[in-house]
Image (cartoon, rainbow, N blue to C red; front, top):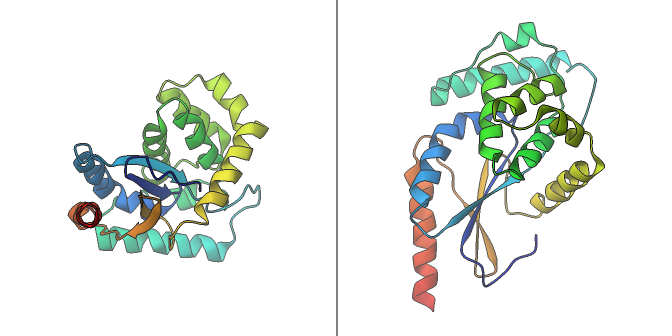
Length: 216
């Protein structure tokens, strides 16, 4: 990722639309975003890409592991899940289509709206965001043209942009998804995440900026 020493401090939110821990973090992330609006720190999203395209059914072992992960997050964070997904859908280990959908929405300033739509479809409505029909339905719900969106989903340009972004994300100081990284004065710093309290990350961000100011 090319850095610019002259740009304002930027917080990168690194995620995958089908990452269950990102869903668990969503309420805290929304509070952090709101708190940062008056901070002088800009926020940008970056897609990590958990799983490449696949038409193969998810192996039973992985299905069991992921459903168990949902239960773990529900217990630890109080996050709501609709476990009917595992009985009503044919899961596939494929998150790149959802990532492409988020990229398309980003171009219209609707990435957060698309992320919300994908997460709610997946975790609350037992719909499969690996399916293009689900993504097209979500696009229509946030006022994207469904026909144009469907064409973009399969375009080489969007796929190239996603592959480029995933490659750039791999160079960031992250441990997984979700992750927060602050770019400031030409350096990249990981920001700790507290799933239940946005102020942990907020204080760390403000302190990082204040420390840099004191060095000037």
